[in-house]
Length: 112
Image 1: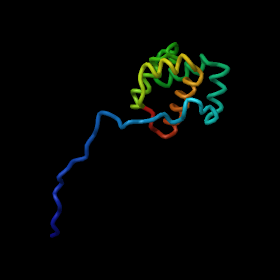
Image 2: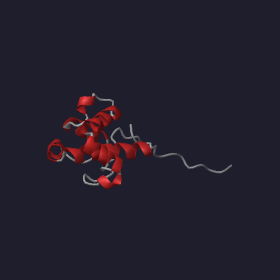
Image 3: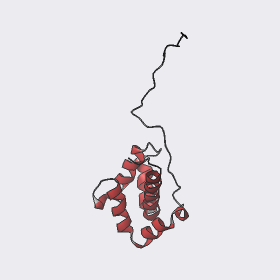
Image 4: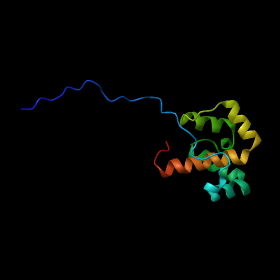
């Protein structure tokens, strides 16, 4: 009978996800032209889609709070101030980036 090495360490589960990044940059509209067109011509509709994806009120989709919620959920570096400036200076780019990120994470089964 062969000697079995005893287990000395157990697999660890962390309640905190590893540090993440945005899947696309703020100005990467060409990565998903459909999202870019929807954001350009029907901004409110895209905001409602984002809110629905995140199980939030349709009126919240374009808000700083929604971007901050998403960023903290996926442990993406940044701050509320950064989210506010991004959302206020370029709301279309901010919302399109959020929707592209959701779509990519959904396609990779990493959206929760």
